[in-house]
Length: 202
Image 1 (cartoon, rainbow, N blue to C red):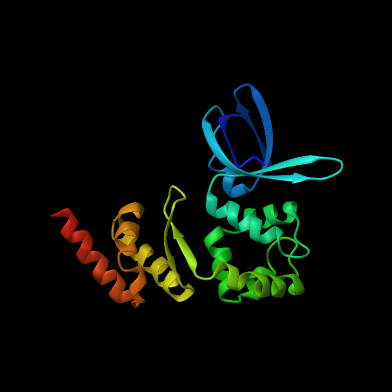
Image 2: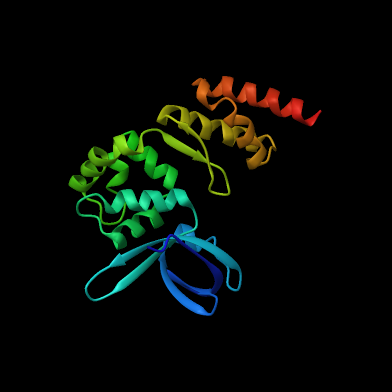
């Protein structure tokens, strides 16, 4: 099984890319989220899933491990194939999808491509326990800390508030992660993060 590919982006298409790996061109189907991270002529590393059928071998590529793992969860749900899973991941951010499943937001899920009411209910039923809390990932795609849905919402609000105050996303998230496990209200989370950030700038 091919776990990942690293090479130069030789071609970009609306729903796929060609990756030149030591002279061999691999065509990978990619989501819109992954496609936006790729640039022609630049090196890239993509996590991969190989679909084996009688008439074809298809590769799917993901720039972040989080998206790759969600893809594997999605195709494990009855009625959702690789192409449908990729369309879903093109329409919604991975963390938003996790939150929708964990909080049983079927009204949001039915708005995704190919997802009807029954499939949305099945997604929640089959994936809620598997996804558990909502992982908070840093900008490089590395997992940072596992938080529960309510805490994740507070983190999002606090992050937006800190960014509006002029703090960079990376430094704001680094500070907020220190308090992510304390289940604080948004206001308290912002206050503690501001104290941490102010101390770090002195």
